[in-house]
Length: 164
Ligand code: PNS
Image 1 (cartoon, rainbow, N blue to C red):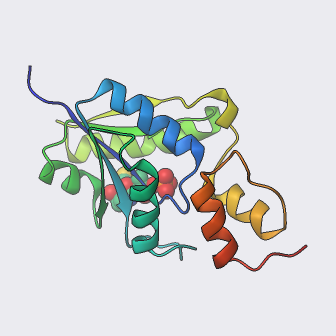
Image 2: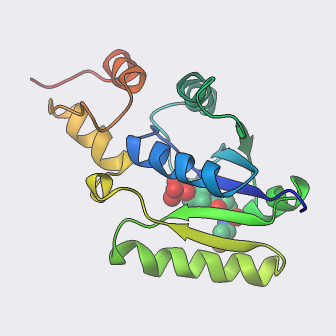
Image 3: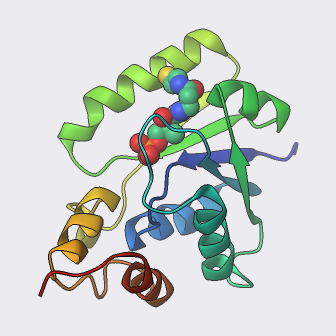
């Protein structure tokens, strides 16, 4: 059987337990999962791409054979083709995600018909979780314990002054 490589792309600003849940599920399905951290997004990220990659690598270290972390810039499908990936994995939490994800999946299919997008659902425990909400809750003094790995909590503490 030929090897199946999947790209799991995102900003991961920061990585949440929902992302990790999808990575673990992907690692069970595909021979190789490349977690691809977007470098030059239009949004100004809280964590630099170097910080996001370093955190992701530290968190996934040892626990995930078949998973590696990389960065990408520009069109996702161009990156996926360079990696000879057959699949793009995206997590879908709720129906509200679907419309945007469908648009991206169909545009990516138009650009690269040989690459298939696979939608995966995280555990329902993470169905409301997003990096944006983690940043906001943390900034305003709320607890993000159990929603992000402890390393991310630590880094949030050093990065963000808290109102409390
Ligand atoms: O999970 P995120 O942070 O919303 O990730 C969005 C991401 C990185 C998957 C998307 O913005 C992307 O693919 N950007 C790369 C540029 C690109 O290929 N745009 C066309 C997509 S249809």
